[in-house]
Length: 454
Ligand code: AMP
Image (tube, rainbow, N blue to C red; front, side, top):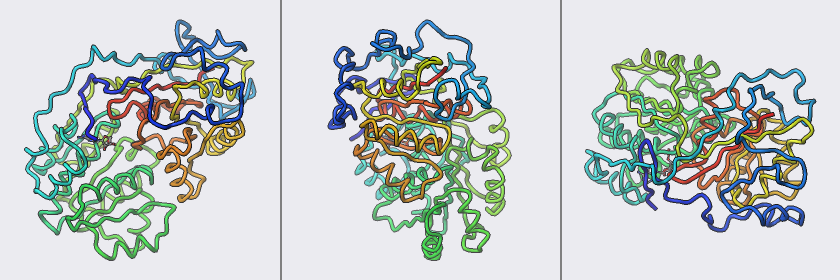
């Protein structure tokens, strides 16, 4: 199950139009016969301009690139959606980019093999058991420095193996010195639990314990797990702070800190929590900060938290070369949901993540799609944690092929074979856009990102 990773320019192992197993398009399983009408003419992997469809509908990018002033609708319909919403200043052309053709891609040649890394045999065995053969570029370049005890800033496109880049050196460190403790902080609960799962696989049989300290889950259980003194604490900022304030989490002996999606962790929403948490850690520690995007402002802030960090940056393009990006123009007289419907019935739309701006809008959209016969579920901050987990599981395991989400699902989540990311509502900023579309085109597969603009 090893995957071939390439560097800056990537070689795609999978053709976009390739059949992806048993996933069924909602239209295939639904009762609406009209849904199949437009499918037969369209070859998989290629979009026909919507102008050619029987009804008046949206067109994808192409030649027309009007000045960008798309309203941030919250799933509004028609002109109403322009009421009282701020106009975006993002340039529409930023949402259009061809994927790099396979012929132009240059394969990355790793300097190291996993066998060469100075880690214990138990960990090497677990790496082999996970099917990893060759380090990805970020792993190849970050792991040796992290093993040397350096502070590392890792910048790499999402889906390129960042988790293992910090987990492998830290597991080794903890295994070699049982006094070591690690705190890993992520912006979302789902990302924390994804990292915990990966950690447990890499640390199998190594007597390493971890606890997830995330909001929305029972704090009592987390407190009792913390009392068993786990080496790894993985969590979200709010809950970690809560546990510190209750005197249940003492970070004085935690000499290792990971900030995943560090740019998000240090922006307005989290910065105070993070500063407070960092102030509880000892002065002498190892810091590993990772993200797909690091703005100049965040970069200088990061430096103030670290000791002569080494920066490992393994990308030249902001977005993955594997993702074909385009816009979907929706005119005043069109209903967005109808335009979306037309896209979703296309055979190549096998597994689709749809981003919306508001929790309510996302919930309503998912319901509307279900009424139309699509198999959809939703994930957003108003949902109880167990329901969020269930929705994600349904999507991950292909019981539904559409997931409607707010930006809680934008970062770091590793979901196999997402063929399309659709920005039904515009993201707040370009960085959020980059993270959203990073859910597709992962692990060298081809993906498509479509952004609704008006
Ligand atoms: P991440 O960026 O950590 O979310 O990883 C993206 C995906 O790539 C996950 O499914 C990993 O299991 C997989 N992966 C990471 N590193 C490797 C590797 N060296 N070889 C094969 N697969 C990998």
